[in-house]
Length: 273
Ligand code: ADP
Image 1 (cartoon, rainbow, N blue to C red):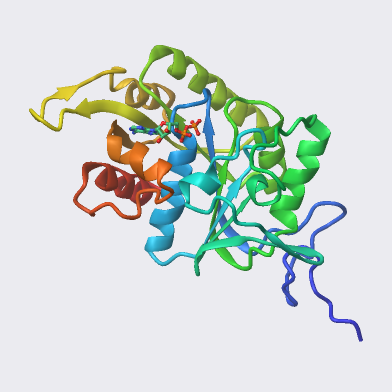
Image 2 (image 1 turned 135 degrees about the vertical axis):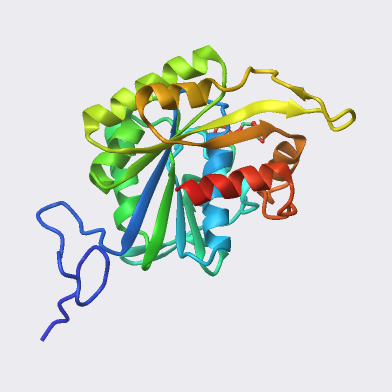
């Protein structure tokens, strides 16, 4: 008799077996979708470091980069140049650690500098494959790095992952970014997914020479918005050159001492999740 495996999670005793064209995602316990209203607010940096922090706590983690036009996760994670293998019907993710698997379009393109010019439906089917046809195995957390805004990609991600996927919204303190966060919150409401919390990135700068705190982009607006909307404020991450250096060097923040203010801020955020 043919083995009755679920076509989606590949688990023999899967209870749901998927239905119609909706795959079962029972092998993924928690789904965190990292959103931002604007580009450049540090969303990919936060996504990568949340995934690392969870993996460092011993969880089994998948990091999915659906920023199709600008996949930056391979660089931030130090995996640039790696290629994902195919073992039909599965796409094999690249391992950052035994318990942290990563998939990005960057692992599939023959040339890193290639511009991807695809329309919505093609992107939607790639995202579906990235979620359903990657050999993630059993995951405690799937962390998804979405492109900014409320367009095709975040919509596809939330629709495919289902209503139990929680959004984590990253903003900087400026009013222009906060305005976009309001749109991201409305987007989640309309699609019917909960928001796990708001993170304020680039929140103040502590001068390494005099120790004074300077609010270059302001600070506190993310927390104020969280209070106003009744959404949990997960924490603030300061501006720090360690983030730029480690991101450029492909080390994420895994090499920072636990007492470093940025590492502490990230750990608090993960605790809050
Ligand atoms: P996004 O995904 O929102 O476009 P990225 O995560 O790619 O943003 O970050 C954009 C740039 O800002 C990167 O060079 C990153 O290293 C830098 N960056 C992110 N957060 C901080 C921070 N708190 N302090 C300093 N630089 C930061």
